[in-house]
Length: 240
Image (cartoon, rainbow, N blue to C red; front, side, top):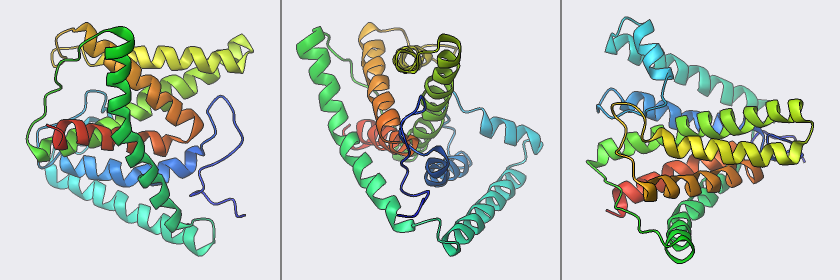
């Protein structure tokens, strides 16, 4: 079998079993869609530092912002073409990742509600939605940026740091998953734009964070990003 970036598999480590480089290729279209969506809606993600940096770097000019991202898209397509011509990339392998993520997205909500209701005895308040365009952009931003920050950053890289200091990879992964999930849950209630603190919402997002952590570790970053995006889109848009 070729060492295709689309296979997204490698030997298990503190970063999990998924291939990060291949995941980033699959995630980039969602990132680009979110970045361009910001030109059409005021919705944005709380941990999105990339678009703010780019927007400030181009003097807060929307046209320059658009040109930068069109250039990024062109470079991405050129990279895909080059990898495909070299036999490194199998584009048809991307669809199984999306379909698998759809399954996770559609079943995750029922699982979390079951745990909260039947196991913890907590009632979840309704998560508000909004206009479909805003919901789409918010969901894209959550899937891309929150998984990059909390799963790849805090859990993955944080787990690597813990393993180096502690010398115990297994416990390091477990602790990093718990800490990153707690940070993920609490981050939604921080700052002027944060939601009012509600225990059921914190627990809900903590469990969701653990679920995404499991997907990230045992599948890949791409699976976690697409699952998170599709789940938020379903909860805030379709299921409202």
